[in-house]
Length: 88
Image 1 (cartoon, rainbow, N blue to C red):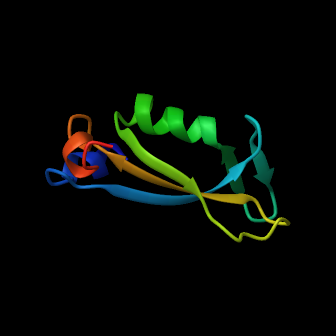
Image 2 (image 1 turned 180 degrees about the vertical axis):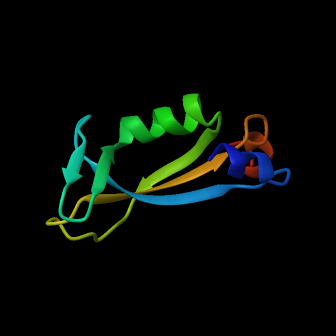
Image 3 (image 1 turned 180 degrees about the horizontal axis):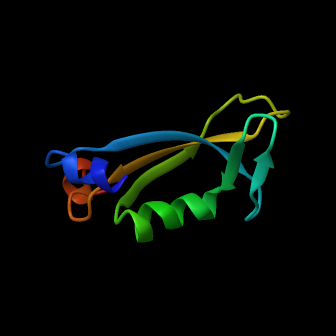
């Protein structure tokens, strides 16, 4: 993410879609060697570790209840968000 942020043009945005676990948990699936993280963990990763700003986040609508929730994130380098988001 740090390399992506460094490569962004002024006003550029990184869009991610991630499955999210509930309430501060991690879910490890040993069958496919995947880890599903919670929303708070992703927010920490984006802001504190990668130094990005979360412009917007939203849950996927009409998503099957049997699956992990799918959350979308719009990320940007600090100081760029006000212009790109139209002051939002």
